[in-house]
Structure formats: C-alpha cells, structure tokens
Image (tube, rainbow, N blue to C red; front, top):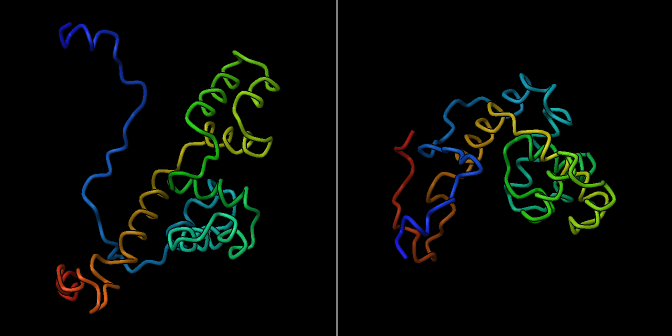
Length: 173
C-alpha cells in the first residue's frame, strides 16, 4: 500500500486558528476597557467578563470564577467561550457532532440529548458553543491580557531549579 492510497479520501474539515507569535500586552489598557467596545457581543458586562477571565486563567474553575464575577456558571462558560477560551464545552467531540446533527435537523432533540452524553444544561451550553463563535477582537484582547499578565520567568523563586534559566524580564519592555 502506497502513501497516496492511504491518504485517499483524507480531507480537512475544520480550520486551525493561526495564533502567530506570542505577544505581551504592553498597551497598559485594562482588559475591561478593551471589552467595553464589544459589550453587546458578550453574555454579561465587560467588568464581569474581565473578572471571569482573570479568575479562570489564574486556575479557578468556571463555577468559582462565576461566583467571583457574580454571574451564573452557564453565563460564565458562555462568556469565556466568546472570549476565545478553549475547553469550556462540557461535551466530547462526538457529543458536539451530535449537537451539530441536531442543529442541521438530521436527528430529533430528545435523541440528540441522549446521544450527546450530557444532561440538558450540557446540551444547552454545547448548542451555544456551536452557534456562537468567539468574538475575534475580544479573543485577541484576552490573549494579550493573559500573555502580559505573567511574563515568562516571573514567579520562579531562587529554590526553583529553573529560577535563573530565563534571566530577568526587566529589560523586555
């Protein structure tokens, strides 16, 4: 069997997001100010969204981030998705395929909920994820915020074996 025979019928079915070169946020503009221009695209206020992003990227769960921002966990997951944060959909890729089949009208909703492998709330969130793309300028602002919030090498103490491997970040800005 040749390589061309193995590759016969292989096709690309989704786009890959080109993230480009990693950036550091040096605009000094708070995230909430950059989110304000896109407030109508977010499921909660820019202030709550900024709090969600900060808490979630610091390692908190969606539920904990939601409590800190004063919104429901469902709203928090929707906002994080619109901000381009990956991993907030509770369904597996196969479950998301089932949601797409339901959205395309190929199967009944009751059958889709059962096949997707989650409960009603999981199905509702997966439906939102499939029908609402991340807002590109918001995702870029969040990426810049996350990249600029923890410069490479910061937080490595003297006891860390890699503590001095990266040098000082003082001269990078």
